[in-house]
Image (cartoon, rainbow, N blue to C red; front, side, top):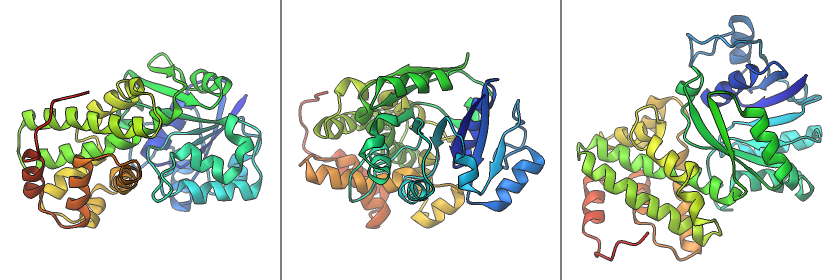
Length: 334
């Protein structure tokens, strides 16, 4: 029996734990800082976000991190971008099993500009690099948890860990492709959230489908510019974790970043929109990280800049649209 420790049981963390529990050779132990949630899940067997879903096999839930990690064959992280560092500082203090560590969160750390796997490595030590991997791609928890087909990407710093992720997560309806460009996989998954906010603003203003199509296309170009400047392979951005995830999150209200943009267009503040969604909106965090990286690499990011100004400088969304539409025309280049 292979024990998997899942850190974080929000919507995506719980969804992955449920998916992993469908495989007969997996024992799944989940950790949360919320004792009420852990007790509810252990007693009721249903997550408040998925009240009609019952896992096919039992999953254990605990607030004791050492208990979750004990004898683990793989660690799967599904906490927030801002929470990665403090969580793995706790992991380091407890001592770590010699096993693969899979990041499933999508973001870039503010100020440092590090992708989340690099944050984990910085906290745990360089000797853990070969054990760190990443799972990312176009996948809504609400769909994956009811076994609708989805395709994602596994990446890492070693071929062994990439293969281990593929083998562990693959199911008949959850297809996992290997990709060695972990930087590109991480950047695609993180930066598309900013574009989803922009498309949500577009939706909230009632600007139509043509404007959203333009935003997605130019947004993909903007993601590619920054990602390549940071050392990613451009073809990765055109794959599942770039274009695929962008298509998913920029046009569905299942995307919290898209809904967040709609609320901003309706005049809600960041805190009001976050409160209405009830979950972390990673694009709001990553927006600042992207602008910091853009400045460092002297890369112009007009859509990201517009989203940032709406969120943090009280720029009216209609003014942001005017700013983008009146920019100097250049030859379209991808």
